[in-house]
Length: 190
Image (cartoon, rainbow, N blue to C red; front, top):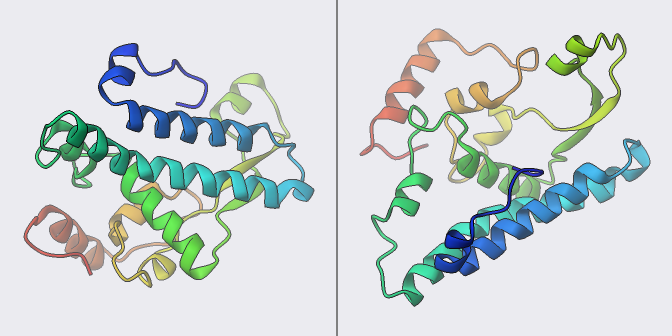
């Protein structure tokens, strides 16, 4: 998303406010990734990531304005339906994960970004034995996420979006309960 192609002109024409928020989110993500990989720049990276999260989340609000200006109903639109996908339909869960990350940062002061060395696939392919430090999202923890008044992610989602090796083991019984809860649309999240 960050270094990919810009939005097509048709999208920008039909959804100008949402497109602007998308561009803003990309801008802040690029600025975060361009910061030197040095702990001295942690505050700058955290600020850019916070701005990125806020811009990304506000794409929905901007799309509602675009729909209203066009005289169309946002409710039930493909755009809204995309945002409301359930965990089993949306493997990334970006919209919901970003809302929880933002709320953890805002309401609990959780530092979301860490500078770490992790061997990634392209490190293995390049034969790099000592990968460089890189900026990463801090792995989500269910114990923190569940403290939110209305978490967007259930425990199984948190386990799914947390990198391997950083996960806590979820009991089979609890995971099964969460799968059922995630697939039951009438049951509110707790």
